[in-house]
Length: 182
Image 1 (cartoon, helix red, strand yellow):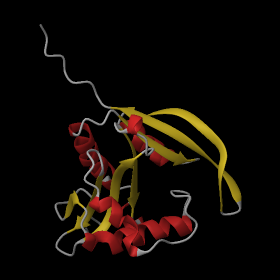
Image 2: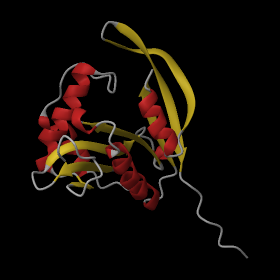
Image 3: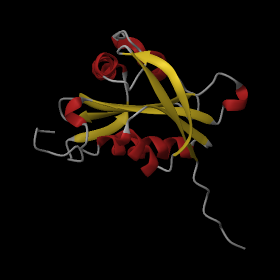
Image 4: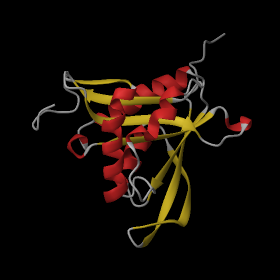
């Protein structure tokens, strides 16, 4: 993807993440740690931060990357993972998407989520949840476009950049299978 091209260009591929992608993913994540409310981490994480997620074989757990070809530069990633470590939540996943600055506003988050939700739906995951720091109209619009609905706001649950931050919980239930008819 060149400075003037769109994230949807043929040189960007969405695929399952590999260990070779971890440094690029960490760079994107750590930029969010230091400069945004996209995560409530306040200290950068090491390159292997997502290594355990890559090894997960649980249905519904996915880590996808969007990479520029042929350089394999990571432009963004999305993941689905355990919401709560209790058996009753096995069909629920928390999801998130992170993009490099150069990839924002170009449709790449949509491409990542399109593939992610195809996979979690195929795995039979019933509910996906997203936690969105407030305010974040761009993230809310993206999630709404995938069928998420706001289901609640937690007031002043995080403190970052010397201020209290609310989070909104958004929920997406798996689309119903088409009715086969009588």
